[in-house]
Length: 124
Image 1 (tube, helix red, strand yellow):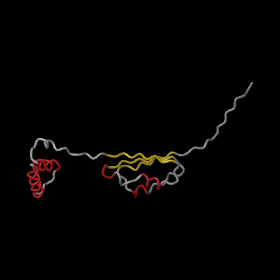
Image 2 (cartoon, rainbow, N blue to C red; image 1 turned 180 degrees about the vertical axis):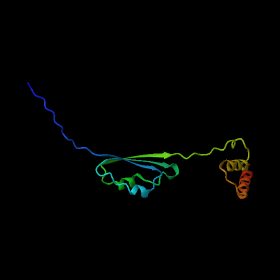
Image 3 (tube, rainbow, N blue to C red; image 1 turned 60 degrees about the horizontal axis):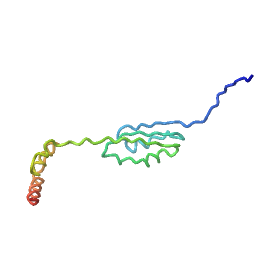
Image 4 (cartoon, rainbow, N blue to C red; image 1 turned 30 degrees about the vertical axis):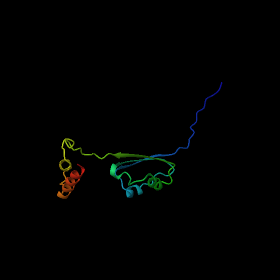
């Protein structure tokens, strides 16, 4: 009869590190990250649509040169665009510009309205 014997064999492994940079991180805050030594590193961050090109994946990879593998999870926060309700119902270009200005709370200079009038007259 055979006797069963069990022994623990320690196997090598790589650490897994998740770095959450939060929302709209700066390159300075990313430069302070350096705990990816020989690890599988996941870098997560959220960034506004208009700033999405301010942080490059290559720059993040340069900061973590000792990481075994880097996975970057970038979430782009879409910019909410204000729709001008009723802008399609008004007829003239001037009225459309004024309606848009009211929607986004911007005062339209008279010079812009004058140019719009001139443009509309020359189109007809």
